[in-house]
Image (cartoon, rainbow, N blue to C red; front, side, top):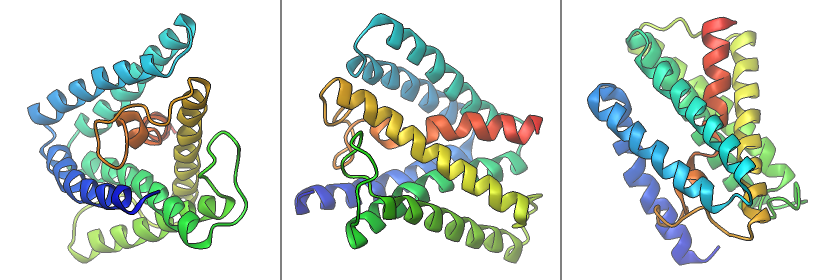
Length: 217
């Protein structure tokens, strides 16, 4: 990746993260409108990287289910749901950041031909960053006396590990379809990152799992 691309990626992240947090914390009309806009943008980008109508229709169904679970995770109840939503959100971001950082710094063997930039070391970097970040996020909540039933025990550790794994699988799934369609990015809406699906590929897989885990298991 060129220096200019890295600069755009970092700058975009510094802008997107606080804006995203404001929208998520708001959780009302602004969150719902934003989610609806992102859903239709994801439909458009999915169409770009699919080769036939069957793939497209299956993807529409999955994306609709995924965004529904994102919506429900945030809007059911109140404060406790916000904390759980942020945990899943941060797991996905930390996983992506850890994979990118470890892959660039330590390099090493490639993970798969589906996504040539992914490395085996990057997989472990994703796990390390997600566990490390969420551990300190829970400590932050406890220090400032925010009520949360999320405790950093073995069960919660396993949840983070599985969610991070699913996030990384989601990244590979979107990369697979991009490779089939011979495109580098799903779009160009986010400077340095590519399209919307390039940015949320892990989340659209991690949230459905997290939703069903949290409310049914």
